[in-house]
Length: 203
Image (cartoon, rainbow, N blue to C red; front, side, top):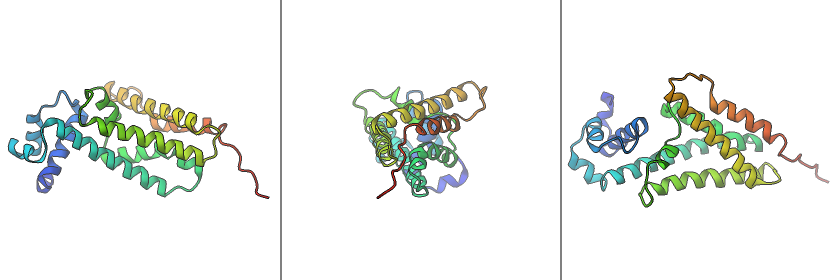
């Protein structure tokens, strides 16, 4: 942890440390002691802020979800063209990765393979899925596609595939140096060209 991080509030230091370790090494493989060591806090401090490791995991996922949503909101605010707004999900991930320094795939997809049913973190995995599905559906409808549900599903498949590819790249030391997000965006744009109905002139 950088020296200036020591001045951050204790709760934020714990979330910083947990977020970094869970993302790099996995939730199950990261013990509470490792989080405490990186955050430079005592065990009692963690339990004063969270119910335990499960509570810390949930809080970490909640923070990541809210940060990701804020970045996507920011990108959408910059766009006016309906198709660009629909494709903004790929641009938002690229910006989020640049801001957060993410080097691997999606933390939510990774967590989904580790968290058991009933874990308090599951609500944030569901929130991420709901955000993606509902927002893409609404944006597809605004773009004038004939079947917003099908388009949202197709874009989500490209999105998930790009993030899975990022994880594979990280695991293979970057043997494939192309950017999966850029490729997925190009594929999505080409596909949408045949899905968006031309705007009919009024009158």
